[in-house]
Length: 490
Image (cartoon, rainbow, N blue to C red; front, side, top):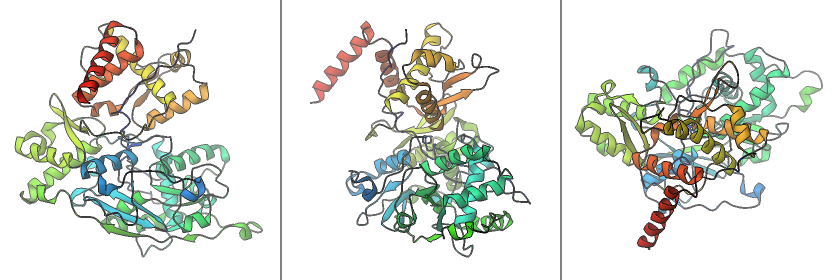
């Protein structure tokens, strides 16, 4: 008999990074070979993972959805929580009369206005390449990179200007450019291409709209039927530093153009739609912390800041002076605190995570996704730990849970289970271990679990106890203590 779906609350894990996406990395550099047929190493941020997931964060245009989404104005929220919310959502929605928060840049187009966090001193996550550190993994990274290159090729029509905002073009034109770029004109790769479009749309690298009228006024739509959809560059493309535009222009010139329409198709091809946009920089938020240091130490602080925020695994303190030196490390912790983050130590390694007390406004995982994550934690971590196979206080495990085991332990339909697994992979909450068959492979907790504080790990342990054994004496004691704590705070 199948067990009922467990229910857990993971407030810390709701706050996955989007670049995460997936805290996919915040910076993308397109490198195309001499023939322009391949797009190589590109960093994507989600942000998570710490990047986000396959479930869309795209806000439906108010007129299309028939309702406006209620939210708290940034003027009424501390700046550190504004930064934490932007990292969760990928971008921050701003009303036209709202101020630009410190450390943000306002990107406005049509009726929409978004806030994008700025990196200190113009640094980018490409610093990970300089130190040969692993970035957050991207699902089907090759296809995603090539699709981003195709979008840039057709949306950036005037190379004398900045890439963003570009123009809105029919999705069919992007797919045609993608087929030319990959040299695979068959329809067998269409599902891969659509999946890459979805990932780029979910992480704000591109914006998919439902038609030219919506594109012209800055609206957005959910990714569905692409026959009438338009694609334009998303706000993350505005984060490319100005000194990288020359390289991008040269790469775009070397890439093959999409094949022109012929015959009767020529009259049916919609024209690109011009998109208006402007940017407004907010006040800096970290300069007062960095200004007392000389150029070398300031660069060390910025490099360590970018690394702990975007690296996939904790980094050893010997690699960075800002992690070894207590005074510099204290300044680094202050920099992270202003963005709702904190340093997390594991022996001699460091990484960043959400500071305890940063609230999660709403759930980012569905009930089915939480159930699947709970099952993986039980079978990959809790059971091996109870058998003495895992002795450390960690939520990472070398023991994968086979997909067949997950199918037997949940009431979710197979399609919904596969969707939940894909979402959790994109968010960095699960990692798929490849094997010769389904029995030897499976799923283990993902790299996002490196970013849990000690208090968050303890709360997660309690939630796992409540989910796995709700009637056990330990679970009853946990509920009683929480009830007493709640009454005492009232």
